[in-house]
Image 1 (spheres, rainbow, N blue to C red):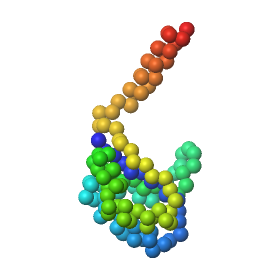
Image 2: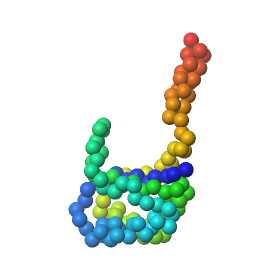
Image 3: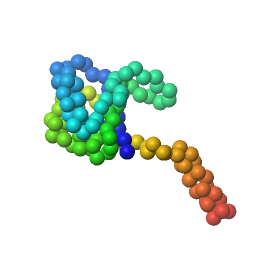
Image 4: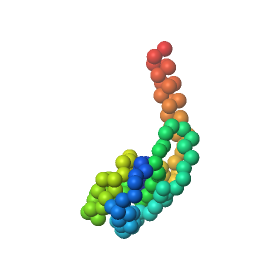
Amino acid sequence: MTAYVIANLQDAAPHPDVAEYIERIVATFEPYGGRFLVRGAQHDVKEGAWTGSVVMIGFPGVADAQAWWDSPAYQEIAPLRSRHIEGDIILIEGVPEDYDAAAPARAIRRALAAGQSSGS
């Protein structure tokens, strides 16, 4: 199942380390099947606060994404970014192609019905 690394990175002043990180990152994730899906594109915040820029990298699976994150190649360059750019980064598994978006609602309704019958 596809996995994603999503970063919400705060804007930072230009720095040579950041330029080097950007130049080198693709070579670290390509061996794991990773590719940029979003990188710093303009975004329109609809709810809440989302400052900074968005980066999203897709991988064939969670194991690939985790292997990339833990790889010596990525760990070598990660400080080039982290010393200069604050942010939040998550690794998350996507849903399967046959995902039923209504299934969670059905589960909630069943739980509510069970709670009403046992709590009444």
